[in-house]
Structure formats: structure tokens, C-alpha cells
Amino acid sequence: DFYTKYYSADQSTLAVVGPQPLDTLQAMTTASFSRIPNRNVGKPEDSWKGIVKPFNNGNSLIPSFGHVVKIVPVQDLRQATITWPILYKDDEDRDNALLTKQAQYVAHIIGHEGPESLLSYLKRKGWANSLSAAGESVSSKTKYTK
Image (cartoon, helix red, strand yellow):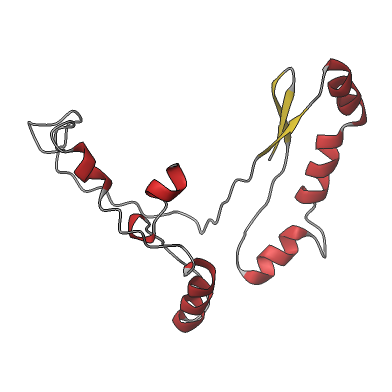
């Protein structure tokens, strides 16, 4: 299955950025990620040899122009998007949920920006500058909350 075939530490890359000292970041990272198994499955591109052309100038499916683009941020921004679906059993269940505005209620609680809010906690930790939350319909039987 996918997990045992591809989920391996040697296939992973992790970038960690934070205001904490390097030793603290390393300890946090080790505690969180050291249990990922290393199955030594090898590079995925090894299985593509002879099937997909390499990404070289003039010999590629995707052109490579050899340019390096450096981007300088104009503001300090930390952003994460968390989305989950709200599934309805049937149209009646959906109608009842829309009438009681469940997704808007959850979005209001998550998006509150006052004292003791999620945002105030994240700001104290240095993890966020702003926060937004919303309910979003994507089909007649599904609603997404962000």
C-alpha cells in the first residue's frame, strides 16, 4: 500500500522556521518527526528513468530557462489554511444546517480576534499576524469550513 511503499524519512524534507533558539527548534522537531520510519525506498525519480525525460535545456517536457528568481517579501506573513468538509446526509439535513448557520457559528468562534481568542494566542507565540475563518459551499451536499 502507499504508506509502506512511499512514506519514508528518506523521501521527506522538512523546513522549520521559528523565533525559538536553534536547540529548541531541533528538540521540537526531533520529538515530532523522529518516529517517521526510514524504509530506504530510494529516490522516486529512479523509477522514472527512461520514462520521463530529464529537465534539461532543450531536452525536457518542461522548458528550463536557467533563471533564478529571488523574491523579497514586502511584509512579515505567516499563513496556514485549514479546511474540513461538513457532509450532509440528505437535502433536509443540509437545509436544517444552513438555517441554523452551523458553519458560520464555528467560523465566528475561530475568527474572533479579541482578548483570549485563538488569534491572540497565536500572536503571543509569534505564529500569526492575522486570522480569518469562513464557511464555503462547494456543492449541494457539502460545505467547507476554513
